Image (cartoon, rainbow, N blue to C red):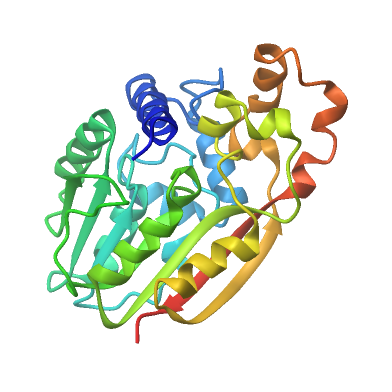
Length: 276
């Protein structure tokens, strides 16, 4: 792991640690901490129902997603599900009743504060079939060929080594296992100043890569039947309430004009793939 990769991972870990502690409902660079209504509004925008949001413990939904992978993962009784970057446990808790007592949900996250929050939520909600493990999605603490379904929500784009994430996902899935992730990708390049900004990276979107490159990493890992289930533009205010203002304020090299059209550059996609 090179120095830049280590720095990015540390910044992401610190940023999301602050969210867990402050009960923020948006990405780490935002100043909108503690707004539960904002979290619900963002989640509703990206595909979660009121019923889903009302069934999980308070504090599990931090409004950090860019889609609802559980809704289209076709989970069934007995499935073993792995949630990459599980945060405070929102998607893991939604998956729990779908897989039932004979199934299991494993959440992996590298942020200690998020893991603590998720475990408290699991105990509070009585989720006996959910566990949370400390680890990085580029090196999963999971056995080979042990998982039926992998879900992830707006997390892989934060990794500086997305190719390794998909190789690891392929390793841990059983033959016939399914990958269903919601994530952010680029449909055109971001301005250099925004792309290189630390605030923008931790704020969700400067770590995103071009859509074709993202899909190529999935195919290169060995997955088949790779397809985009849905794609839509993703409003910046949903990614991180005031992230664009923060980027401008913290980087004098970025002009307001640079931010015009940024929303057109970033897309939210839901991707499905199968391990042969």
